[in-house]
Structure formats: structure tokens, C-alpha cells
Image (tube, rainbow, N blue to C red; front, side):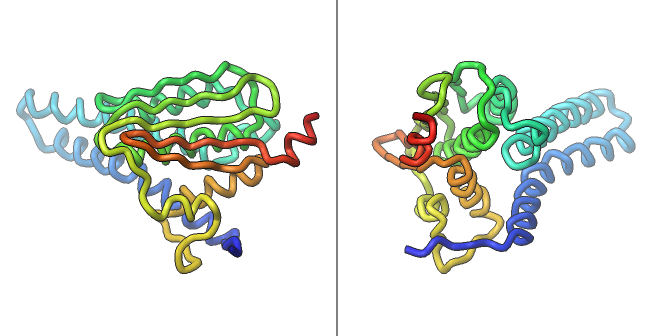
Length: 221
């Protein structure tokens, strides 16, 4: 099957749309809270507005910090990113009252495309458990070649039917929109990191694995 090629400008535009989609809700809530503070005199309502502003600002900040590592050029001055930084932004984005993040990866400097791959796989895992559950991130060790495993366990855990094709670079009807760009981008990052993706689904469990390609293994040997 022919792999779909997306124009670089279209890729950039779609990723920007994805980031804007992620932050527009908390930013809008901040604006609403400020409007309440401007007009409201009741102390209880003002306290509610301040709480809304604080929580929304934290959410917007967490999403932007995550996107900076997952999509952006963070660490572009070097070839590696601290996995501790990746854990921090993942916890800020994913850990909430419904979802628990278990990070079983040693704190090391890892090639940045592999760090980006881990974070993007986390996003896909989170989407697979909309009712919440446990996301587990694990790697095979601290030296190359590294294998990556991200699992999502929860009620009715399931990947959307179009996700495997997007990850493989073969989207339906040879087109990608803003809703599918993140999964498509994940496949591109895996390819850039010389890793192949494998998906397994069982009862209430989705497993996403990234393994080094044979060429990558030979290069390390």
C-alpha cells in the first residue's frame, strides 16, 4: 500500500489547528472568568470566578508545555531530551481524577524523536480510554536500541477505527484533517526515529508498541 505524503505546509497548518483546539477551551474559560470579575460584586461568585481562572490557566499552561515537547522544536539545539521533562509534561496533561499515569521509564537523555513518540503515543492512549483508566509508559532500558510500550487500560478501551491507518501513513481516501493529524504525525515521528509501530487490543486494554527497525538495530550493533 502506498504511503500518503502530506505537504509540509499542510502538516504545519494542521498541527497548529490541533494545538489551537487544545488551548482554546481553557483560554475561553479564563476570559469568561475575567468578565465575571469585572461585573460581579458578590464575594462568592468572585471567588468562583477566581478559581475558574486559576484552574483554566493551569490547564492551558499544561497543554502548551506538552505540545512544546510533543509537536514543537523543544531541545532543537541538541539531539536529546531529558525523559524527566517528558514525564512532567505528561503528568501535567494526563493525570486527573479519572486517569492515572504510571511512568516506568528511567530518567535519561533520550533521542528527541523517541521522546516525541512517547508523548504522542500517550495522547493516543488517552483517547482510547475516554472514561478514564490507567496509562502505563515503559521502555526496555536506558541504552539503544530502546523499545517503547504505552498501554491504556480502562472501561471499553478501544482505538478509533481510523487510527491504525493514520499511524501507518495510509489514511482513508488519502486525506488527513485536523482531527486525524496527531495520529498521522505520530507515524511520521516513529519513522524519523527508525521505529515501527505495533498495536494490540484486548478486553479493556490497548497496547501501543514501538520497536527499532532492523536497520536501526544493525546500526547499533
